[in-house]
Amino acid sequence: MWPFDRLRQRQYERRYKAAVVVLLGTYMIDRLNADQRVRVESEVDANLNRSDLPASAWRRLAGRSDVMGAFRAVAMEKAGIEPPVPALSWRQLFAPWANWRKVPTWPIMPGFNVMPTRLVFDFRPMAQATADARAYLREHGLNIPDFDPWDHAPR
Image 1 (cartoon, one colour):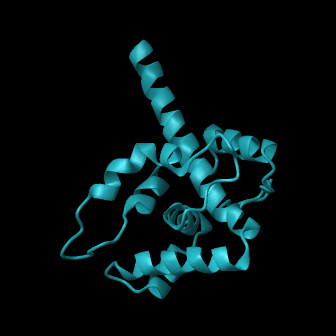
Image 2 (cartoon, rainbow, N blue to C red):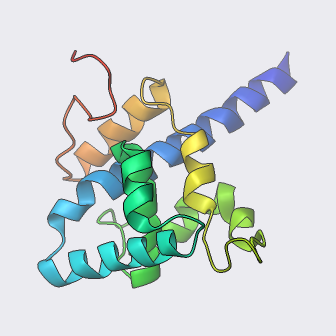
C-alpha cells in the first residue's frame, strides 16, 4: 500500500504548491504599488504576446482568474517581486514545473513561457490542498476570501 501513499503525497504537494501560486498571483496583486502592478501586467502581456495569440485574446479566452493568477505569479518572479511570506520563494514554489521553462516552443511561439499553463493543470479549487494553502496564506497576513472567482457556487 505504501507506493500509493507516496503517490498521493506527491499529488497533494503539487496541488498545494499550485494553489499557493494561484492564490498569490490572484490576491497579491492588490498589495503591490502602482509601479509594481504596471510591471507585472506588462510582463504578463509581453509573455502572452509571444504566443500565437495576442494578449487580449488570451485574457478573453482564459476568462478565469486562476489562469491569470498563474501568469501573474510568473511575471512577479521575473520582475523580482518576492512573495510576502518570508519562508517562501518563487523558485521553491515553481520547482515541480521547472522543466516547463525549458520546453522549446520555437518556431511557433519563441520565448513564450508555458509554465503557467502547465501549473494550472495541477490546481484544483475544491481540493483539500487548496483549502490548506488558503489557510496558510491567511495565517501570514494575506486577505484571501472564502469565495474565489473560479468557484461555481458560494459556500
